[in-house]
Length: 212
Image 1 (cartoon, one colour):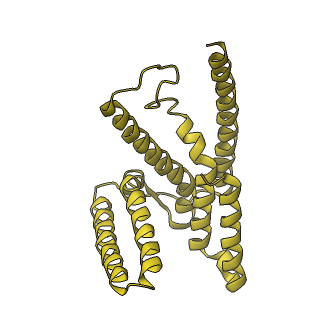
Image 2 (cartoon, one colour; image 1 turned 120 degrees about the vertical axis):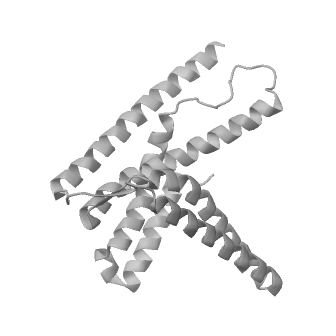
Image 3 (cartoon, one colour; image 1 turned 45 degrees about the horizontal axis):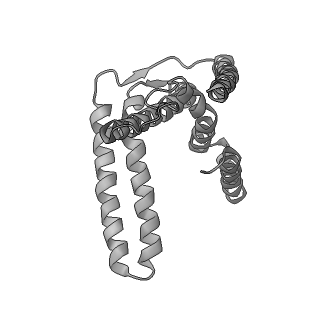
C-alpha cells in the first residue's frame, strides 16, 4: 500500500507544479478547496475510520476459518465503512470553506459521496486503461472512453437527483475567519486524540495477543 508520506509528497508536488505554471491559482477557491479536501482526507480519514473500531473485522483469535458468506459480508461491510469514513472526512474539511466562500451548507454531500467516490475511481481506472491500451489498439481506447461517458453521465444524474432533495443545500451566514480557524483547530486536536487512543488500543491488543 502507498504510505501517507508518499501521498503527501505527490500532493505537494502536484500543487507545486500547478503554482509554477499558474501562480494565481493560489488565490483561486477551486485550488484551495481541491487540495484542502485531499490533504484533509489524508489527515482525517484514519481518525474517522478508527471510530468504527473493529466492526466487520475478522476475529484474530478465531482458529477455524469463517464461512465464505460471513467473510464476503465482512469485506462488503469494511468497504462501506471505508466509503462512509471518506465521505464524512471530506464533509468535515470542505464545510467551513463552502460556508465561508459560498454561504452554503451541503448536507446531502455525505450521502452523494458514497456513490460518487467509487464511480470516480472507476472513471480514473477506465481513463488509465484507455491511455495504456489505446496507444496500441485504438478500439480499446474507444471502448474505455465510451464507458467513461456512461459513468460520468450516471454521476451527473445522481448529483442532479440529490441536489433536488429538499434542504439538500442550506444557505447560511458567512462565518467569521476566526470561527473557521477554530473549526480546523478542533479537528486537528480531535485527530491527535484519536491517534493517541488508537495507539493505546493497538498496544493493548498486542499485549493480549502475546498473552494468548
